Image 1 (cartoon, rainbow, N blue to C red):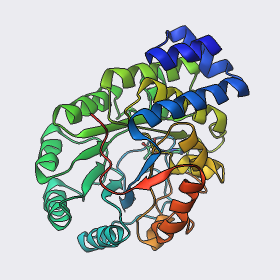
Image 2 (cartoon, rainbow, N blue to C red):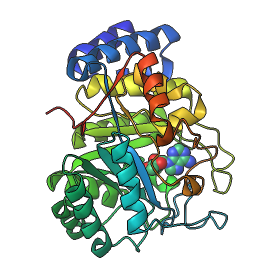
Image 3 (cartoon, protein in one colour):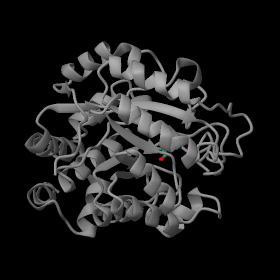
Length: 345
Ligand code: 5AD
């Protein structure tokens, strides 16, 4: 196993069989080695730097019915809300005053947020804060829409592929959603010049290690600037309520593997990781992640944007306590850097 890990460190590549073996059977010692080498690789391009992104959850309405997700349209218990233009601008204002230089507008697939609404809003944010990056995470849209959003000034787009294997994708999503479409959205976003993010959940129902190998191979084809992974966490009002959550050690192992394969990627230590362990996000950073996304949504909506149960929306998770968050990151051995935090070329 050690040999495989060193090979991955040296060449950023190993065979499917080796990858599978690593995913399935790495020991604690192997994980430690992975972590050390991943930390070394991240240091090469990013030093000890960690970038912050202010996450603004603009809508909990969603037309999709993904089986894992708490804001699926079929969840009649979900409380729905939409932020207004003014709400969103004041989140940015507040975030800017806290030193954040990337705003992530994330939401369900909500037709209310059409191009006519979004484009002037994006332009306004970019005009107010020319040195800030705007990231969108609003699901699948048409090529035309993506083009307009890019022209309006959006810099980045997050769209997890969720599962690169057709059979698994079908088990996680309703029939109306097609893996082919998801993939083509991602390649379109790249072509249009968005810094593009993709990723998947770890430990999703029915997911096998072969599936994870496919996910990694897909990411290598796409070569995104950003890669987000986190544990699957069941939500009590979804069909997947009875499944167990993703394994912490496996998520961390995969963060390290992804860092070794994608030395220059921006890899967030996700909220989901912070949800399954009180120090999950610090562990993610130590395993090779270099981005943290504190919540910038208005406090009263945070609990309504409930993708999975027990999502952390405590003070420390949110932006109010940016100083505390910075201290936690410093205590883990890293340093929050100002600025947009683009991926190195
Ligand atoms: N557990 C973990 N992550 C989830 N997401 C959605 N539902 C869950 C869940 N139950 C993730 C998806 C989506 C991102 C915004 O949140 O991967 O892309």
